[in-house]
Length: 262
Image 1 (cartoon, rainbow, N blue to C red):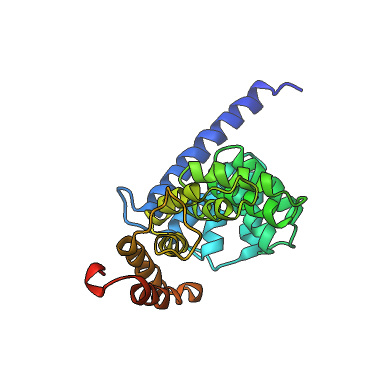
Image 2 (image 1 turned 90 degrees about the vertical axis):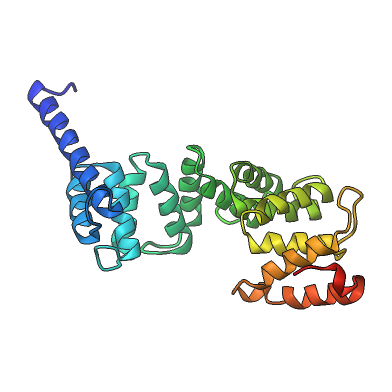
């Protein structure tokens, strides 16, 4: 049914008001041209969100999820992310997918999480592509499919997602969902390592010092490998703690200490 002229004018006025209110809230949130104030920013986000502004709803969800300008409240965060996501806002679709997958403020629902990840991925959110790769690889929310998982990891990796690049390197090393190709594994690990991903630094370092099966396209490079292993060892994550020992063992097995620069 067509809107009356009066209703149409009211809707236009609300849209303009919501956009202006959101814009001021965003300036307060980022500190652009005004002092940063999370509390006041959140008040503006709420006013715009109540008028149906999708970005404001997403930002209000973020405020509740991080406790910025509000007390942290996962249920309210999920509520506002859903309102925004159902209007087609890609970032909110990804955020809601994360909450559905982990059960933050909502019941765990991997099938629904995949649905929202897919909506976000279709709009170019590479974090959602990475998560879809994980869902397909593990069979969570979808039927397990290593090839489809690798496809999504590849999409995310080509958009610069360091986590996806690291995982894709392991896929090429093992041949899971892709043709086994050590050279490609090294290429993806290098791209990820250059972004500071410790997992990729560890894997590429191990490859370069000869801990994996060699490949003519990946010649041994003890100096570069030791540096990468040492970089990985600086990380606080427990799974990377063994990298320092691995680096030292590489030096003892393969190199004169004078040949390696830390």
